[in-house]
Image (cartoon, rainbow, N blue to C red; front, top):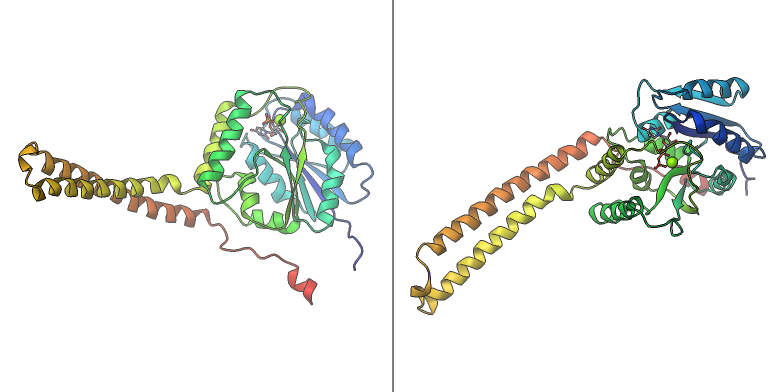
Length: 318
Ligand code: UDP
Ligand code: MG
């Protein structure tokens, strides 16, 4: 057996207008990683902050050479900021966490330990049983249920953008250049050896959520529409249903003819009904066919890799 290797680590922390809280987060982070004893880099991604965030970050980086700042040209959103940070990371492992103290940095050593045991993805899961019922909690639970029904990619309910990734997993994510990004889904899509680590969410130390209702809704739409083609296939299913109804109606009308009760049929009803159902069905089916082509085009333009290789397996055998 080879001795446990010590991975070099990059921490990626996206921040948007977090000037008041970033100092607290940083101090807590430093004490959590103080005994780690390995090559480490802290990448703060300033997502177009309009407050004092950049200034605070610059102070942190003059005091500590391990702190790097990546400033985006405007506010691109949390998922884009995380992507920028992961693209800039060069370490053998990358850990992403929020800058508002809601993701406990005390878990980092355990996450690294799991990576060093051979896991590629250490995904954390928010345990919010203790959190009182609220609209946000209900919306989150409903979203994950819908997402998991509609798409072939299963996402753990309550999974957060607080995770540790091996270099292989980071490279796999980097091979997915899609514009609408839902990292929790993408991380599940790439596969690899993963483990789930539950945590109790803490309250934000200071400041307010930077995720407006609009931003949250957009993330949910990105997630559903970039991981599911089901909405596009509704047309073809409705078309098939209407054509079936037309056939049923035909049988129904025929039954009157067979039993000689045609006088009970209102004049014009049969033909009118048939035309309505068949034309409606054909139109729906045509829309459905277009939907299928649009779905194919959508999958092509995302340029996701057709497969990913789990590196290292051959080496171990040989
Ligand atoms: N964030 C960001 N860009 C945005 C919105 C949020 O970089 O457009 C950062 C934010 O500074 C924080 C993290 O993403 O570090 C999570 O955001 P927040 O805590 O506001 O979300 P919540 O915890 O309320 O879901
Ligand atoms: Mg937060």
